[in-house]
Image (cartoon, rainbow, N blue to C red; front, side):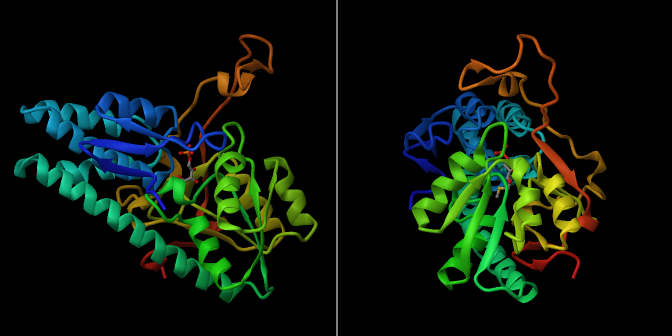
Length: 324
Ligand code: MRU
């Protein structure tokens, strides 16, 4: 299967996630400005995929400028394109560290990061699958997920959906419930698309139905990805994740977070200081361009929330459960 983001003939190529599920197409991004625009529009999104975007974008900058300061200025703009997922600035910093060796070395580092992302997410999700099989008695499993933490959110495998791929291959999945994930519908548009393509039984539900599904005994485990994880295990992820964790705790269901270790921010003791991206009012006041609220309605539209560590059963990276 094609990678979500790659380097093709001197430019960054992405699967256009804004066009899905209506159209499967790629976009060629030949400049840092084009890439920043794609990141802001969520044409490329998901923390690990943003790590790849940061690294490949830095390679674009390194080939575009002879002056190292100009490369660094582009790299800084890239790292700031979205604030919450730590992988973006991590990818930029990792590629930029090779600038002294020339643009080919920057690109080589970015390509190594892409390979690594696939491998580490494969391993992290295998470890999480093993953990879930250990703590959930029921077979086959009924899983609930939020947003899109699949192939499209990473370079090519997935984190929370990576768990589904492992469990499904072993015959352990009855179905996946995919929260639609308001307001941009990454669950309905992207997760449902990936689950259908992989032949995994699934249903999309409104975010507001997730607690009711738990109350009705339809869920064995909640499994989600992450955008930034603090050292104490607090987790920033798509808005609505915190509510899911509260509901899971009320119903005594495991709440498992899966991410590559690049999503753990070693500088961050707790989730309190994570910068939460606020997005445009139009994402809420319009739907497919049609107004659904009076013009000028003020909104609260944070893209992420922080789930405190005590509500998380385990954060699993390629190294295994965090803190154990
Ligand atoms: O705004 P998005 O679509 O970039 O948000 C993505 C998420 O919140 C994902 O759950 C997270 O990045 C984990 S992806 C493996």
